[in-house]
Image (cartoon, rainbow over all chains, first blue to last red; front, side):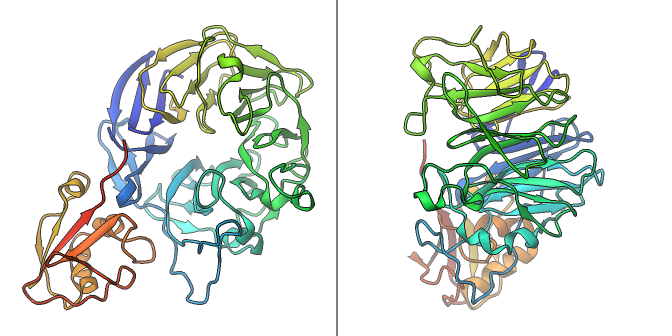
Length: 361
Length: 89
């Protein structure tokens, strides 16, 4: 729990023992990171020159560029347009949004991207394959972007009991599950409600905007979702979802769930969709320990006056010990808690805007 | 042979010295460069082979017209400059 990777708008920062030990890719956006089997993976968005993937086998001292996910040739007769903007769907990588380990192989990886592609690698990112079974679902053409021109896959939750069972979360395209390693998919966001849609579409599972979905490793039928319109929980493997109300707000982007206790989860609220700052300028973390029946508001060590931090969807992470949490904000602050969120310590207030945090052992 | 040069900003990220390559079109010349340096390809064109949105290719000082198929003709002594837009803060 002593090494933490912090991906920001202007580089990747490695924290060790509470100090910033290294800066990599300085100046370039780092949109996703993953530590696995001694290898570090970093997704670097070079803007004009596209999103790239880099890998380090020496703890971040040196990096090599590996293959980035790539779309196959777009069929000449493909007439796919965004249902919102009418713009043609690009069959081309824009952003790498999430990287996850696939326990079926030591070098197997999942990757979620904008536009909404799910990719799989069996060789640690040496090569990638678009998961066509999900991409070719007719509902995919109804997905749309939330904050980006096109939708994206930001959450990939593998069932540790059977890694062929995977959930993918899409903004805005709901949640999708496979039981067969990605051969076939079912929509898995029934019960979520989209207030941003006209009444007849509000409960359509394929247009929901879960901002982030996490799965309890020790109780993998339990999922928590921080959705655009509130907090939802599933206890039945994402077959159904139930809304949970939190104070001071149920709006936010990030969620973390305790690795063994499915009733314990953390959120970082903002006022609402139209006002994405902490309630009354006081940054707080909310925590439930009873499956969402009640929430505690945790604020010790967090700025409480004129604090306008937002925590992005990959900006909050709980370590395998269930006690250590890391959190990074759009305002470039980074906090650590060693007591399950009761108190926080700022390790930096001077980073670029934080996109993602990950424990690396 | 046409000569292809790259913006200094790209040379920070990937090895791309000036290259004298065969080719009668922008696409053919770039394909010859990518054959030498496969990693470079993804920095210049998208997954479908079109120029990236913020990459501009000039031939003899004129921006190319066909950004999708890269069919603009180039003379044997053409100077092909791969540039970019600068933006952001």
